Length: 404
Image (tube, one colour):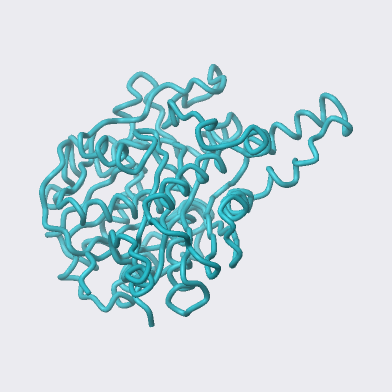
């Protein structure tokens, strides 16, 4: 099977509008979480989140594209544009697109329903079906860049971005395509989504201190913080990258996914499927647990989720490996989280620096290095990126420094 490498990456997040800016902010321990400004929150239990600020879609989209695209698709398009610019020469004909999202174009769906109810069917946009489809981001990227191979969406809740990268890597391995543009995108900072997640008692309610609200692996954690954004990478076989002179940033060495088959919102109390996904990804990479140098944890800041993930990490990898949760700064980007965090893991390999877990004042395990508050220098050759989601979805990626 062909070895799969990353030759470009792009990101739009609450802490940066590019992958480089996002990385710099995370290493500096900068929080992108604050009071929400785009929606009315006066009657919501949680009034804050990780908004994307300063993003001007007109810089990369035409007026026609802008009118029909949901914010989640705009983020994906911008991240893909950055990744493709980094990757270099034209992709060729054997390329595909796979973009993951947990919930897709929720804002557009709500807008179209509102127009229908308030103004009648004759005022509904002819693009409503297009902009309200979960494959709209993938299709926009395919259309703009002439990518004529498979063009699809994947949806597995908060594991969507990681699953998109993992499944696209399988496309490459098995010769389905020679290049894949893959990632995740999300924008569900809506009244509906905040209300339903709040009613499920999943969100933090620290409205008086938003930047301190997301506390992965801290004893005082009280729930996750919702965020928005996108992460997209360009994947291809190593020999293909060499042939066209593309930069090799990291290798996607392993991937595995499992399902808890237990509960819609609660993780399995024994974490069996989480451990199976971690072990499966390492086996897929042909690596031993002792070779892992860093874990970018799912680390959402929920009471049960963090405890069960930590137990799985200790069971599979031991207690020596540094573990950090960058959601403490970005919030939970849902379907984009796994893709953005895989990029962060690749950048940790590139720079030999592990970003911190901010707000981790009282670690739930004093032995484990959660990289509290400040980034740490580590020689990272192998990184594991965990992504788990509602419905029992588990996806784990293993990234490795490229060595021919």
